[in-house]
Length: 201
Length: 135
Image (tube, rainbow over all chains, first blue to last red; front, side, top):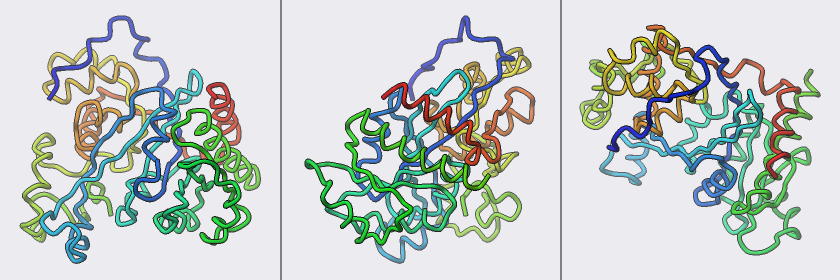
């Protein structure tokens, strides 16, 4: 382990300053669709990773033979942060990719302002679990098609059809490597959140 | 269900009779830090909840050891539980237990996401403006 990476803060804000208000967005999608890349592109801090232990589902994994020798496993949780103003801190949490980790999503999505479900058009079926999940929650979501190889604009309606996404859910294209492109995708999520919040007022 | 949140009703608890032996090996070790407990004092603490060191915590910092010391030092700048875990190289569940103890002792205060944030249009609008500013 590293030696203590933090010095005693010398002249920090007084301890009674009000702590920031945390809000969060969830970045979901199948394995390898660009969730981590997207978070890293917009985060003001280097991407952070923490591990959460999984024990409950281990037996199930064993039955499928995917991880035969491990009964306790850990799942890595990637996240980043954007300071919005002097009070609000926005956290971006990437969901663990595989749908067998879906049970973690409840924790991640609880209270989230919204979710960006990232899709790779070459492997649409990888994102079924995420789309299923968010369709059954109250969390507003937008489907973001990650442009790995040039434009996919002409395919958007095909994607909508293939994923059976209702007309109320926006589909956008973006480039997970490009900061302003990711910000635009997040903004479309937030506009969806705002519309939903306004409607239920 | 999540491993750490069960409290008394948890199907997974260190030392519980019905915990299969095979799960014990790698599952328990991180909890040596927490005195063997897997359940935090407050099971509901969100991973983005902001932890801030109190004046009591600052006064006591030299009497704390190891991870508790590090957390109290670290949170002089308010920090999310997930960030504490990542920066101190702790499992998320362990960080949650340690933080819960520090709150119970008055060394940390928590600012949690308010209920209904996701329906708060003025908060959402502020986040939108903040993101537009960094495009």
